Image (cartoon, rainbow, N blue to C red; front, side, top):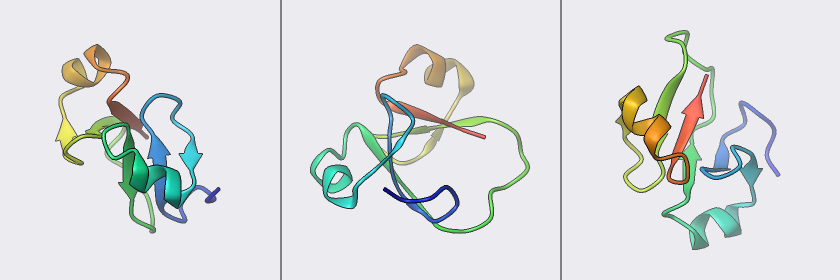
Length: 70
């Protein structure tokens, strides 16, 4: 597993980091995160399917396919 801030894959279902092999084999339910400093824009949601940011409403309505990032 990857340390927070180190990049890697995160499960949309559990919110936890997963192995790269699991992330690559489950692209609809995992999000690839880049390494680096986290922004200070507050909590936001990212789609595990498209990798794009989505609205808070959509993120809350789709907990199995979105990841809440803080």
